[in-house]
Image 1 (cartoon, rainbow, N blue to C red):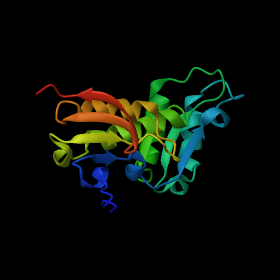
Image 2: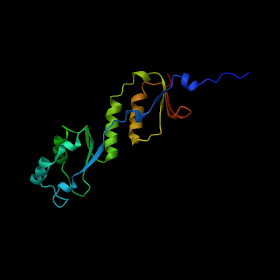
Image 3: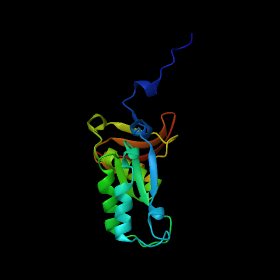
Image 4: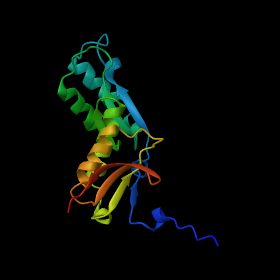
Length: 169
């Protein structure tokens, strides 16, 4: 007589966190300010301000923006700050850097605001395979947030995890 197969994973207290589930919708866009510079190298304040004033900022509505300059120009901090004053009414998030910097900043904010009350004193699995560009730093930030509160942290899938942390209490 065959015994019933029991799914111990489904019946356990294990909670899986998939950072892809938190991936915010919205286009990620790089704005390269090189073209707004004199000879793509020199920031002339009056010309720069005029370009910003005449630029169509509405095309960045609900987008995540990474500001960068791909030339070897020295860009003063105030230039990126000035650009952000035009973008703030439209963009969801603005950073100076590349798309990885942008994703890192997005996830930093998401994890900071993550409600972890459902994870307290429970074993947690952080799912590892992702189809979206989740930065490696996001996983570290998640562990920093969870570790003081959870029973254990594992990485991978429920069928094959790598143990990372076990609370000794």
